[in-house]
Structures are given as C-alpha cells and as structure tokens.
Image (cartoon, rainbow, N blue to C red; front, side, top):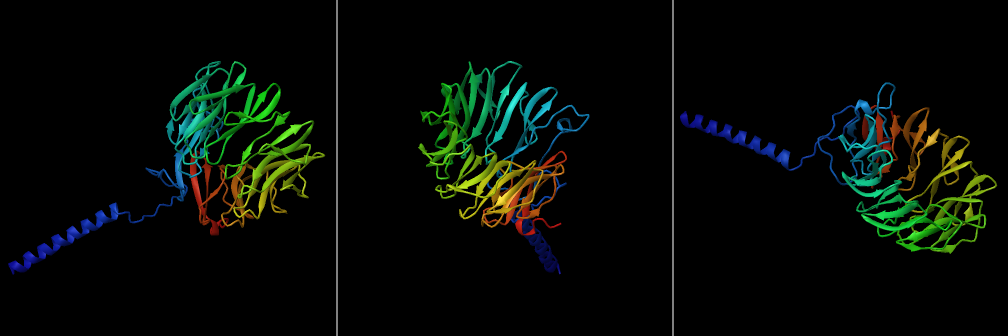
Length: 414
C-alpha cells in the first residue's frame, strides 16, 4: 500500500513538472497569440521596430490639452505616421510653446517648430526649431539640435534609407543646402531638395542671378527662367524636371530638353521601368495628362498625384473639377469627393485597383477601387502588404491615433 501511495505522489510531481515545462515552452518559444486590436483596446506595451505593422494598433492617446476643440488651450498639428505603421509623431502647442510628441513622449518645448518629418521605418525624426522670437533656427534630429540659421530652417527631408537628413537653412539673405552636418553652397534661393531612391544623390533647384538651375551633388546645371520640382527615376539613374524658357514650359530629362512646349507643366513621374514618363500640362486654361509625349483627351481644372501600376501597364491620377477632386484610372473617372489627400494615390501590388485617402462632409476614409472604407476623423495615405492581402493606414479617432489594418477581400463590408 505504501509503495502504491508513493508511486502516486511521484506521478503527481512528474505531472506538475510537465505542466510547468509546457508553460515555459509556450512563453519563450513564440507560440502565436492573437494580436489584433480593434479601436478601444489597450495600448500595446511594445511595438516591433521593423517591417510593416499588420496589426491594428492604438499607437497613442493625445492629451486633452492638445485637442483642437473649443475651450482647450492647445493646437494639434497633423499626425505623421511612419510608412511601416509602427511610429507616429506630431507637433503640438502647449502653454504658448510648441513641441514635438513622439508617440506619448514630449520633446523639448520651443517658440516655433517647422515639421516634423519621419523616416519610413520610424527610427529617424527631424524638425526645425526656434527657441525664442527672432532667434536663430536650427535642425533637431531626435532630441539633438544642430546648425544655426538666422532666417529659417525649411524643406526638411530624410533619405529613403533613413540615414541622412537634409534641409535648407536661411541666413544673411542666402539659402544654404545642408546634408547631415555639412553645409553646402549657398544661393539666392533653394527649393525642392530631393534624394534619389538609392539615397546616394541629392538634387534641388537653386536661384542664381535671377535664374534657376538644377544642382545635383553640388554640380550646377544650365540656367533657366524657372524650374519646378525635380524627380529621380526609380533606378536613380535619371532626373527630370519642368523648365520655363522664353515664356514656354517643357520637360528636361538628364539635361536634354524636350520638343513639346506648354503654357505650364506640373509634376513629373517616372514609370517603374524608369523609362516611361508622365506629367501634367496646361494649355488654354485647362490641364491634361501627357504620357510618353501622348496627350490624354480628358481636361481638368486642377491637378494632383500621378501613379503608375507596378507592372507599368496602367496609370492613375488625381484631378479637379471645380472645387471637387476625383481619381482617374486609365480613362475611367472615379467618384467626386470634397478632397483627395496629396501623396495618397497608389495601386495594389497586383496592379488591378487603386487606393487613396478621401474626405466627404468633414469625415475621412480610404477608397479602394470603388469601395469606401470606414469613416474616421482623419486618415493618412494607405500602404499595402507585399502580398496585397492587407491595406493599412494611420487614423485619428477622437484623441486616439491608430494604425488600422484591413483585409483587402473584406474591405468596405460593414
């Protein structure tokens, strides 16, 4: 009898040990848990730092002092989400000072702020700051300040690889390009700095002796009456920009002037193969799209983003009719909205549909194909998972900032 009792005790002990080992395996070997959070759930303790966030996540709660509602003392700037959906920053006014809020952490308070901007992976944040009225401006990267410019710090950009910050600093009536902590040449004016997709080059428009020239890595190009925004090709090997000469506008690609001229030319976009090119052109007061020198037949009152599909076979663009905006895919016009956000128009990875951020009657939502998503107080531009199964975007719900992830196949369903 004693031996049987003793055996039973040992069996119980072994059973308890096995349960404990099972718990340890569950906790430490990464057995998956349900991660999806819907609006109203708790803030996660930790958000991974790399890769596209495919989990609906409440990133932060905006303190009431920042809310833009009557009776509150603060003012809230537009939130800036990293494109991977893992970080969010915004500028806010508090007690008469401006500061940048990193998620739920306040940065230093300043008299004035320009920005912020955030890298695609969310690891780099930069903005301009001024400590007192009429004081010098300087760049702040993270929490570290650098440089000092009497007039302003503007046109702040971060390289695609997230490793370099560039901006324009104004001093003594001149504009100076600054990359990292190195100040380049100063001109009468500098606008529209842009990094190449491979982050190895930077180009901008400089004003010199009343004329404009493109400057690439310190090398000045030909002078023109005016030059607008320069654009690198996806492979970083070509640069295109619109120029005005003798009252007419035309396109310059790699220093070669195009033949066709127009009353005005808007932004230029390369196709995914870096060979196709599309841009807005204006003639007799109306705007139309030009694709590889072929003029489209639809005419509009205003212009917007242009987007090529990944396979290069389709093109979509934002246009304006009166005070309303719409998206045109190929030759098919979409629905009119009060506003369609800049830099939000993209194709799905399979090149079959377009998505963008739109506003109607004061509310924001994502449009995918012909379907409208749930409404929010504000939304950022959408991104897709590489396999095209998920669409994700930043949003504001009251005083909460969320990263929303929807399944494409269920999008627009209540």
